[in-house]
Amino acid sequence: DAGITQSPRHKVTETGTPVTLRCHQTENHRYMYWYRQDPGHGLRLIHYSYGVKDTDKGEVSDGYSVSRSKTEDFLLTLESATSSQTSVYFCAISESNYGYTFGSGTRLTVV
Amino acid sequence: GIQVEQSPPDLILQEGANSTLRCNFSDSVNNLQWFHQNPWGQLINLFYIPSGTKQNGRLSATTVATERYSLLYISSSQTTDSGVYFCAVSFSGNTPLVFGKGTRLSVIA
Image 1: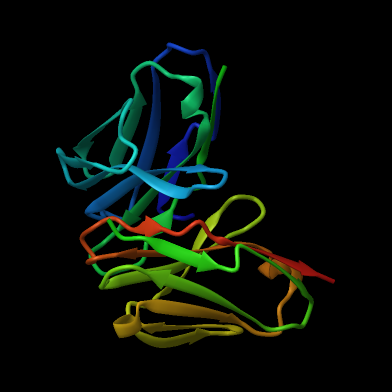
Image 2 (image 1 turned 90 degrees about the vertical axis):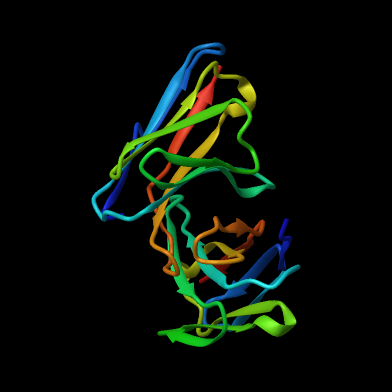
């Protein structure tokens, strides 16, 4: 969607390697979120940010870290990828009391 | 944490039919949104509706916050309405949304 982009769109990586996914916004929104989507589970929150250098954990944060050094970028890092982290990852942005806008997603496969 | 239940889990409709999707949630919320995920995976925000009723074309939504449910109405369904519909809630606009597992809708021509 206009204003939010995720990269890469697809990635295949090996077990044990580090992986970083990027979310970039041009809307200057305060809040940014990382969700993962798996069959039978809907979307589950990994981490979110409420400002530069302000982040908090979500429901499924184990094995993931995040960083937000500037308003427009929110990075998600898998320190040592495992097969259970094979998923589709979505980034979203919002301002308080407004609807979320989602990126197009990153399909990650860990082999 | 908040529990969100959506029903039905799956729905198959003939083109032109109407449908109602339901979202029940376990606690008082101040933020409720409906999303459509199309067959290509893109998530589109349909409504921000913590209470009351809104309409957008053939789609409308009603949230009764005091009774902890929301309804999404789709009238005169089209094949392009196919996909998964998600309801998501949170305590406030500042807290992250918790998603239901979705209703998968298939509209057949």
